[in-house]
Length: 140
Image (cartoon, rainbow, N blue to C red; front, side, top):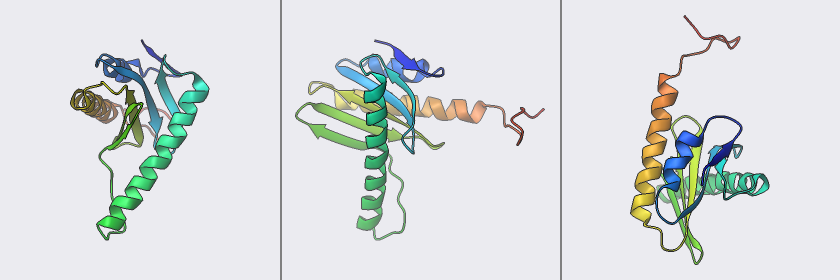
């Protein structure tokens, strides 16, 4: 399995697919736009996953803040367990999110480790990118 995307996101998603029993993964913006997805999904399914993932994250941030009696809360990860398997959602610090799905036999600890590792790599790459000026040109 490999990644499909409009840009170069295979380096983020393909290592997640190397975890045994992982079925699919999506890279998305926090507002629910698909940045990349794996071959197990068709584009309409990836878009649906992204929209739902964005909504779930928002609901989880609101719930965490309410339980803590705070105005805001940042979510580090969301795990959904169902009879079909596990969904792991991990937001990044720069406005994107990785969502991965494994079947019921996936090792959740291995999946979580790999997704968090890839999120950290995303952060490193974002920090290493050259800053841009308002007109889109890279600064000198």
